[in-house]
Every structure is written in structure tokens, then in C-alpha cells.
Length: 363
Image (cartoon, rainbow, N blue to C red):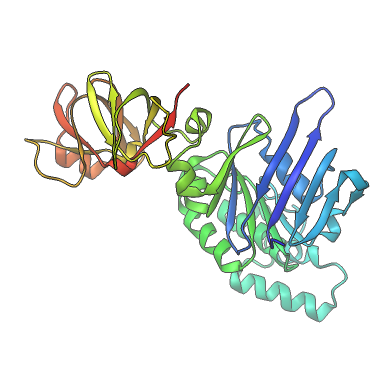
């Protein structure tokens, strides 16, 4: 029996959507699984169903071989008996309780000595020294996040659930705390399930990704595999593949030659069904390399002449819109963009490695 989550269930809302989860599984390791998708996809409903805050109408939820919910038997394990830690959006700290009392809240029933020892352990581990007597309103967003995490972990849960843990933070704080939260989640040694609709959060925080849309699981697997090789056009849109163009298969062999208009591209196609002749060509902006000058021998098999059409600033990065016979996006650091001295209307070479071109069959 798997030591992770196995979930197949339906949750209905009166006059609202139906969330139908099929084949949701997490690996039996201490990793971070991200539920990812647009607002309204059903991510928080899944998280609340795992937490025992919602009762599914059909199906089962099993964790580490133990049944948490089985609608066919009318069995439902209450949240208090599931040994989970839960970090809700905006942290939900008790405003009238100090940091140490917020952390201790989940330890009801513990002896006074055990309670004090566990609170002290959490304060030391999460770097909250000197903040013990402060109220939540006296803390920064990052400090509140750590207190909420400490409260959830104080009970030594078997599973940690986090609902949009960075959504309440401003952009600079969010960027700074992503790496810290990733480190904390990995150091707990506790499997975690995290909800987000932010692509960067998913990439930085997750080991595995579950893409949801319309109350359904669309694709799941290792984060970079799902982002790099979406199963269909809908998933490609959700994970924001910047370039998706219709193409035709021209030649097959160890590599596949694809035509997009008058352009020819070479890609890997080992997982493409042999009868496929029409495809969608998916290229991530970060996989496009730009250079000036004459083409020279390089590792990328695809070297396209392109014209710079415009720039979009994205913090430390710059997104460059190109025309190479079809629209193409590239993502460069500001330093790389400055070194190339790119200008609108200027010609460049766009290099793309064959393994970085993903093909989706097109009906």
C-alpha cells in the first residue's frame, strides 16, 4: 500500500460546481506536492477534503494505507483524528494571543512541560527568538508565516497542508520568502500538499505538480516534467507555455522534423504516436537562447532568424517578443539583455535545443 495520498472522490455544491477528482496520488516520500491551476479550478476544495473540513459525496480518500473517507460505507474520519497540520490563507493567527500562545494552541491536552518544550523547539527551529510575547499585528508578513507554520508543525503531523501560503504577502516579500519556505518544508521531513495559482511558487516550492481545471485533475507528475511537457493544449495554457503553434510532421527518425509555416524545426518525438501528422509545437520562453552575428556551430539544432518586436519587463527578467515566421517569446536576464543591446526591429538568432521543443498531437 502506498504511503502517500490516494484520492478518488466527488464533491458537489448546491447550485454550484462539481469537483471530480480521479487518480490523485502523491509519492511515498517527504516531498511537496503542489495543487496548481486557475482560480475556481477546485484546488482548495481538494485541500479541504484532505483536511477533513469537507465531506465528499462519493469516492474514497486514503492516506498511508488508512481510509480517511469512504462515501460508499458512509465512513468519514473527522479532521481532529487525521493528524494533519493546516496553514490557511492569511495564516489565521489568533490576534489576541502572543506568538508562543498561538504556537501552543494546537497542543491542547499536552502536559505543561511537554507544551513548553515543544513551543521552545518550534521557536528555535523557525528563528522566532525575541518574538515570543508579540501579538500577530506586531509581526512582519514573513514572521506571521513562520508562526503559522510553527503552530501547524507543533503537533508533529503526518501530513502538512498549505493553502496559498504566500498569497497574503507583497511581491518583494513573496520573492524573498519562497526559498525560505522551500527549505523549511524540506527540512520538516513531513509530506506536504500546497495550493497555489502562481507559476513561480509552484516551480520553486514543489517536487510534484497536480494541474487542475474545472474541478478535474488534468495532469500530475514531477514539476519540471509537467511544466516542460504538458499532456494537452489545456494544460499548456494553464502552465503558461509562451509559444504554442500548430505544425506539421515532415520527417520521422531519431528526431522529428516539424514545419511551422515556412520554418523547419527539429524536435524529439519518442512519445508522439506514430500516426500523428498534425501537432502543436510548445516552446518555453526560458528555453530560447538569443545571439547576434552569423550562425556558428552550437549545440542547439534549431537556429532561427528573428526580428525583435518588443520588450516586457518582469522584475529581474525581460520578456522579448520575436517574429521568426511565427511569434516566439524569449526570457532573458536584464544583464543578458543589456549585453546584447537589443532594439525593436533588430535582427537576432533564436537558438532552441531539440529536447526543449515539446509536441502535442493535434486532431
